[in-house]
Length: 139
Image (cartoon, rainbow, N blue to C red; front, side, top):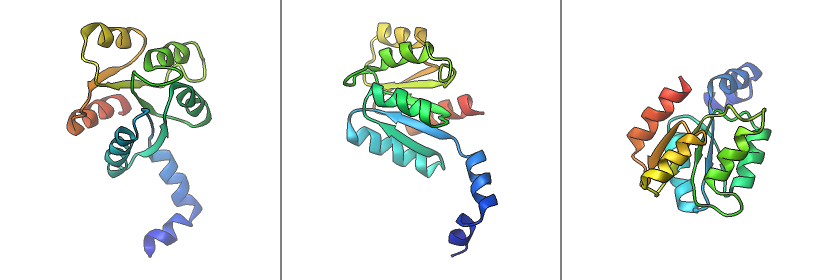
């Protein structure tokens, strides 16, 4: 009950928004999105989702996203194309991106990092490694 009362107090909402990082999960596979969303919500992150690169770019512009977890293979715009377009847009170019992909080829990892990704994590995701990378970036 106290939690419900707190949520209705304006100062609580302001404090919550100031201390909660907004994470955008971008993947076209629903189970991958659900898995990451659950992990992040348990760690008290506010989670937004997108199923393709076009949605991801729109979400980055409309919300104050702290970090993006981005898949490579997706419809419309793939992860590499998202990185390229993001880097050309002043309002979102500094949002950090962690690539999250099943691709393990060295050239794919290198291209992701060259195009602006901060880190590259291979699927299946190691929850502890994800949290370590996120904490490094967000602290």
